[in-house]
Image (cartoon, rainbow, N blue to C red):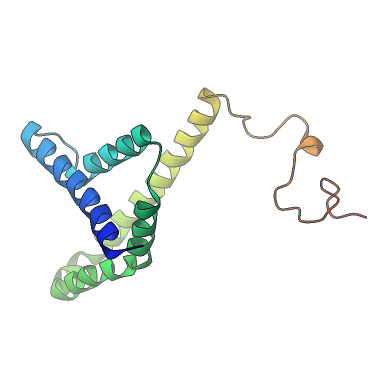
Amino acid sequence: MTEFAMVGALATLVVCQLIGEIVVHGLHLPVPGPVLGLLLLVAWFAWRGGPTQTMGTTADVILSNLSLLFVPAAVGIVQHGQRFLTQGPAIVIALFASSILTIAVTAYAFLWADRRFGGTGAAPAEPAARHDPFDTDTNSGTGGAP
């Protein structure tokens, strides 16, 4: 992959984010601009039949360096150390509570979507007839028995 192709893929990501920011600020919407830009990007991919190979490779490179984004957060913690000393317990409680709430809401949303859109529910009617994707034995379905 050429660097020029990667620049084009990065430009697409930035332009989608910019359009999201412009729309959010122009219409005073209560969502972050990057979220709207991401929805625009997903709609673009749906219309075009999915991301290109170049976009996929570029996304992989970005994700492989995602840990670098924690550096500004660490600097913020150092700069606001006194605030964390005085308000630390409240911050930690808020983080844990919001994480637990997010996990619960996500689980219920998946369960609702599973029931609403024709999923199988909690368990299939005939567990023996189900294919085990982790069974690597050649006698598939026998649980590894000869």
